[in-house]
Image (tube, rainbow, N blue to C red; front, side):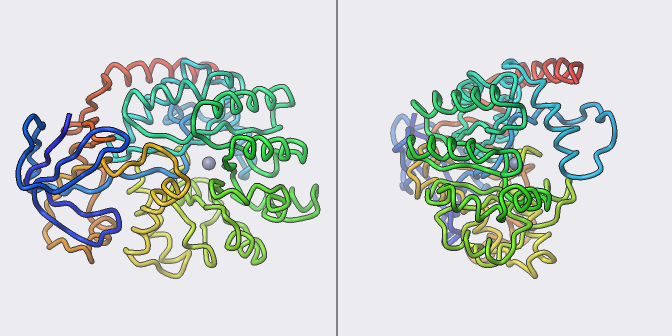
Length: 419
Ligand SMILES: [Zn+2]
């Protein structure tokens, strides 16, 4: 059904114009948005008086598998470093997941994403003891809720060859009939043979890899010790950087040569400031490749705008300052990544309606500052995905959020008991 957003104040994706009027939104993957003086016959009118309408947001690096972790029991002992955080927390959690828990995790993220004004999630998934069917299950859940997606399965040798093979098979089967990426955990848990097989699989499906890079110094130290080179040199040699679809997450502990490799490559970079603070691993300083950086949440939540604000504030120290406009462009860069690569689902008729009534004027020039200092997910009123209303006045339209969240809590309880 066509939607007509009456009295809508619309700000475009690049924040170049502010215009008020009736915005007509047509449905579908090729749907459009157009200003029209009238509400077309048969259209569903939504009064947007006093509200802001702008393109919905994208999370560039997420971990749906960790959605049921919030408030879980403490690990057997306190992790002393980053690798122990993985061993004692995340790798224990992801190994305990079964497919029902994976589905519940996807429901939790879909609901959280829509309530944050997000209509597209790029995810990096791991469930080593429930790999077969896991990507398909996540895709089904996100499709039903109205959240676009670009998924991958995290390949790694950390759990032995059988688990690696299962992950590879799930990836191959999924990419045969879905858009997606080939996931790799990180250089320090992937052998040369596994790296080669992953890049070959990506090439066969004409896609890129999605991998954590230099999140902690341990990744670089391991690479120097075992491969006699740095992580970006290893990835460059593997051919993984040739695809315009490749995503490198974190990229914190790089040297100048590695920065130059990224700058010269076709790869993109995902930044996750809050997760980096949580793990005390440092902060990204993108220098030479700032125009490739997009904003992710690393599984901490699904609020891309909140993640951009955290990045903006951290950058005042870590990057020697970032303007609201530059932070805004970084928040919006994931749209360019998806469009450049021809991925479906991030369409112009994906919109968020914000119930934002500011004490100061809004202009195209100062909209980035409103996003960095004023607008939060609490202002998200309604969300439109591919021209269909998916969140209406803060409530999910296409799924029963109360029933799904009740099930999430049951699955979380079951998961925590296994830990
Ligand atoms: Zn991550």
